[in-house]
Amino acid sequence: GLGQPLRTSDNELPLPYRILLAEDAPDIQRLIKRMLEKAGAEVTVVENGAEAIQCVTAASQSGRPFDVVLMDIQMPVLNGYQATRALRTSRYRGPIIALTAEALAGQRERCLEAGCDDYVSKPINRQALLAAIARSVQVCAAQQVDASTG
Image 1 (tube, rainbow, N blue to C red):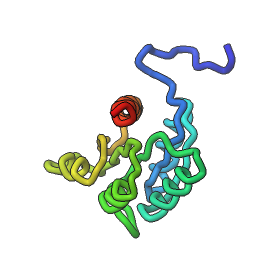
Image 2: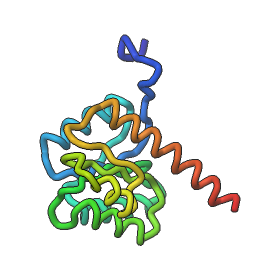
Image 3: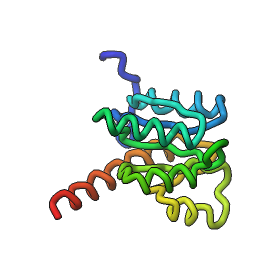
């Protein structure tokens, strides 16, 4: 085998995606980056919502847009809600998954209202995160096909 892990279960799909991680805590940055890279993703890390917007915009303009944005909700400068709203206003159509510190009642609604496609609460569970990413990418791809045929 070419450095393949010895055991992969069927539901552990590799994620060959370009992912932007907006997260201000260095330990969580490292943890999530490692999880995603092990699954085959190419990960770019930024520390706040303002940087996330710049990064997404620059990537889209260069013709290599991110496949998924992971957006921590509690960040300095611009929080995840503000950054997500700004991205949606600027016509970013890709999946945005919120990372929330605690699964508070009403938080899911707030995330979805701001324009997030899904959310994963901390402590981050690898399986849940990978599943949310895979699901969001598929849903977004399907929506874009609908939009382009219409």
